Image 1 (cartoon, rainbow, N blue to C red):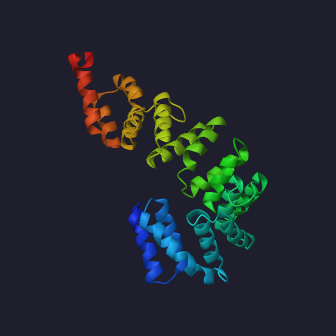
Image 2 (cartoon, helix red, strand yellow):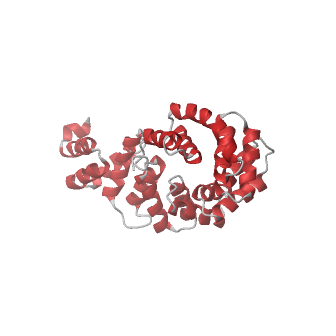
Image 3 (cartoon, rainbow, N blue to C red):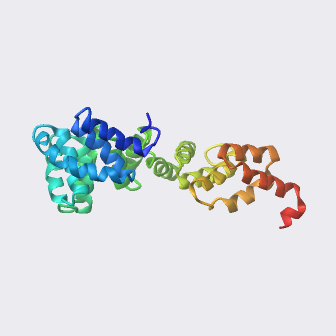
Length: 274
């Protein structure tokens, strides 16, 4: 539950539980890899220690082979060795191996760069239900209709990186109502580009009626992720809003102080002139 809530340390602790208490080494590797991606330095050391222990199970267990392949390719500076292991698991139908190998093949890491092979590997993994492979395939597919199909699969499976990209592809096809829904999902997930897009669309009435409360909400919410890019637009929106609407936007965004300052500027001529 803690890991699902985004607590990075919980990812490492799960790895430790599976490595030293449950003795499930492939599962331990999975959680240590997730912890390493989240920036937990201790997980990197554990992966180095875990790799030799995975060699024997990797000979007979597909998931163990895949996990060892990922560790060797990305954490032990042995991309060629990782490619060999991942290729064996990919040929055996493991979507995680197929997706990871596709990345290595696409960028020519430990193997020959091959865009067509990378795309085929991604497609196999995506068709097997791997959401991250679907996202990667959506990116590789550019602006095509296939991109929409794969990005929608990834977004519906909860891959947050897919939300704004899917919104962009849908917008290009004038599917504005659905595009706005995905921009809002991206905004709720903390993507500042999605916040800005959702705010502008609510301000201008794209994908639905004009909603200045939601527009100001997302302009202000950008401050929560360290971006002040929406402040200029926020200043242009608040003169069209009531004090109650501004405060509601502040409450929704968690930026009550900024909302109150906007209200004060509206009601105080001297403050507005400053």
